[in-house]
Length: 476
Image 1 (spheres, one colour):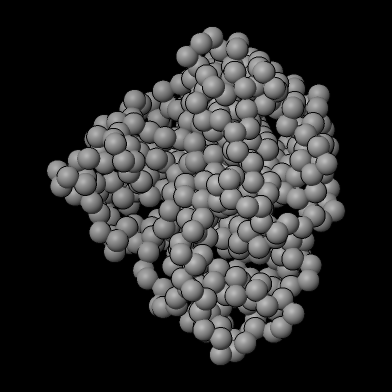
Image 2: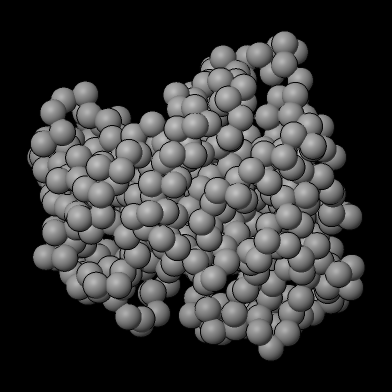
């Protein structure tokens, strides 16, 4: 979801709260002006975190942006008192337009402020039009060991519709170059649900991608952004919007084809084979700490360096020039910070953890809720029991997770599960009442048929295409 926000999770959480409250487009908590929620100290844990770096093409010289990224990374690592950085992701849709020197400088700063293991995953998002072999080789020399390429489509007509600058031939060339330099560690992004796209056309495109790809594929349903040409064309009726049943069919077709090709469907939008999962993305979905660096980046960490004991949701200033001025004046560009209450943290654990095939383990839940177990919340009669009986959800010794069928319906399942959590949280000393009705704003009903339901999860929602295309964010 990550450094640029977990919008799908935030939206699901907000929708389930009485009155539909929540953070709008932000990550979970409400505006900073709201009263501080009940807080609890973050349980003792290894001082580790993932790091997300949001790079934007500078309007000024790149050296100034580089200096600010380095300074902010050092400042926030010191503030978090993180001892080890588990992974780094350079995102935002344009980091491949940066020079390898900028990437190397950030990695050097991180290694100087905390331990950066030699085997740590370091991913760079790349546009096919800026992913030639010499440039990619420079990133590899700088320390990048994994690439995420925004292919989107291997059809030139579809790419023109999306307003992409690259051609299908350039996309193929970029993936081939990347696989040569980063064998087994190259991911591609693909979009479905384009205006006028048929299930057959999508299947043929995916078949072509399977003949090209490495061992990681991310699939995202096209999202339209208000104020863009493509959105206006679709909403104005000039281009057809695909019906929900077709979107669901496209998603199921892709799942079937990818699994048949040996891929593990390890997260709603992500598929990997030969163990090539994104460890950085998994850190988001497992609700681990992460630090967001750069304009508009989001983070979740405990600011122990200033005496903090509870996890905060942090957002960096979005406008690049303003962000740079703030970093130059005070070391970082944090625009908004909100302490997350224990319930808000559990809501995120639930909404993000259920996106994965592993779900939420008892151990992970216990880290955030030592006094209220998964079984106590979701094992009692209620929505979760109903979903288990319908074959959408599992609760066993491994924890709480969706079935294969339930994973495709997650956006429909989450509101009821979040309501059950909120209801149970309000009665911490009593068992869930079998006959208790839904909390205000909570309703139950049969899950609707749905595709992935959102753009992506977990990783930064950074890659934004032309003509109102949001490609699922996160690069994964």
